[in-house]
Image (cartoon, rainbow, N blue to C red; front, side, top):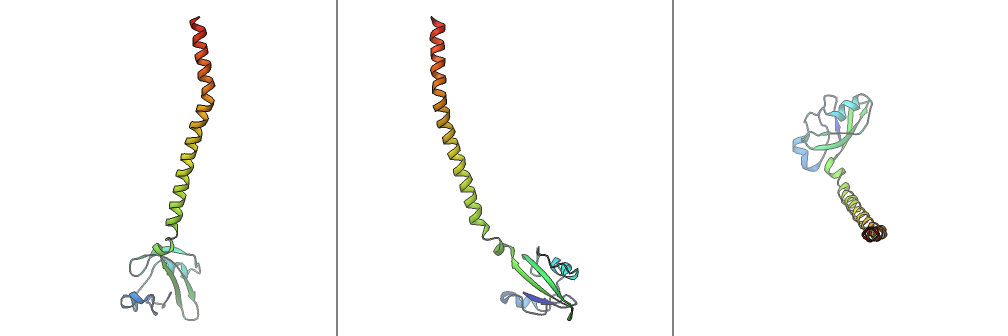
Length: 126
């Protein structure tokens, strides 16, 4: 989280590893734009360092400042990786199970048909 002034200059320390580049830098990204419109919706955009982030901004009317809250997109979506792999494994397991059951059912139901075809061929030969 950091504070942006009315001239879109960063007034507070956003991250410990980005202080040298941040303080005094100008920002005018989507979060500020939507914060100006009193629409504090969450947006995905590039921050002042060019890193993709998810953030929002709220306007402080008394001071004409914006409070911006951001999180790196990679960090925000990191939980999706194990979920994605779990989903893929579930789909793959289900597919294999359906194929095995369908093979078993086809041989179970196909056996009488094969016997019928064999009897029909013997009757034709007689």
